[in-house]
Amino acid sequence: QVQLVESGGGLVQAGASLRLSCAASRIISMFNVMGWYRQAPGKQRETVATITSGGTTNYADSVKGRFTISRDNAKNTVYLQMNSLKPEDTAVYYCNALDLIFGYWGQGTQVTVSS
Image (tube, rainbow, N blue to C red; front, side, top):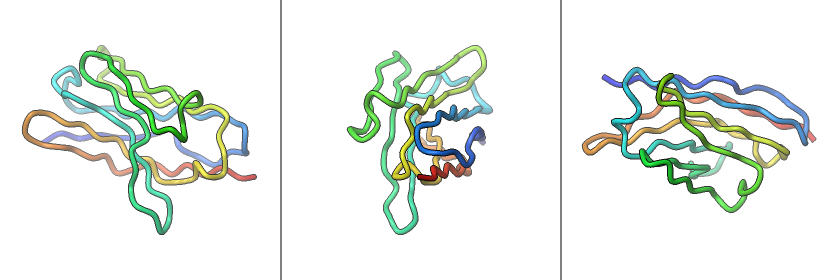
């Protein structure tokens, strides 16, 4: 059973920064893709950023230039550095990991950005 534990969310003002962490209970190099997703109230879950085992990254257009996804294989942790936060970034942020068979989700961490 793989566990993903997110942390780092909180309440900040617009323009501030936060760094989310996703700690995995398994060696993350074994996952093909890891990513961050978010879900705002009344909206569908959307992709924020992904990173492959080879280090290739992809971002939603809405966060390009502001968010950075990275991974530390030694710590089995994936990060999401979020800068210049906007009120529309308010959501529950979830970590996801995909291997050849299954996809795994964390429990989510709340990010609230006030104007």
